[in-house]
Amino acid sequence: MEKLNQTNLLLRFALEIAALISIGVFVCTHFNGFFKYVLTFVLPIVVMIIWTVFAVPNDPSRNGQTVIAVNGITRLVIELMIFGIAVAALYFSDLKTVSLSFLCLIILHYIFSAERIKWLLNQ
Image (cartoon, rainbow, N blue to C red; front, side, top):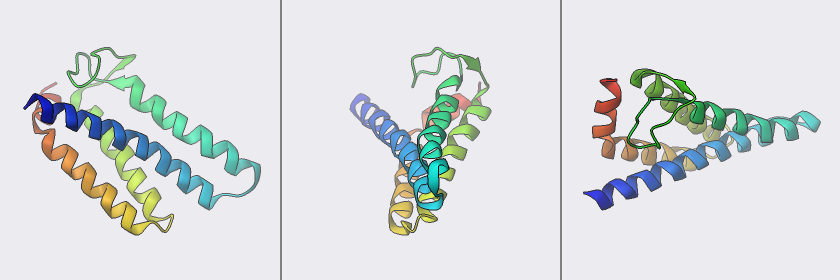
């Protein structure tokens, strides 16, 4: 079970990185000029900050520390919103197959994260 948990944590990390890249790809394909280059780097950084700063204290899937403590439902909503935005970003960047594959991996991750979801909902 521990190996499965470690594999799921690795999957989640990969999904988080892919979400940031997806948002950058969307900006890069939908904007022009100087604004395009600024947003391609700034927007994923802002999302990464949101992902990092808002956390549930003592979350066993993280280091347990947080800058801004939120309850479990809020954290889950933040995660789902970021992943949803990333899926939509891929879809509207004409990467529909990649978008669907990414969505399936997200669903798989949350299926294997049932214990964490229960923990978050009780916080």
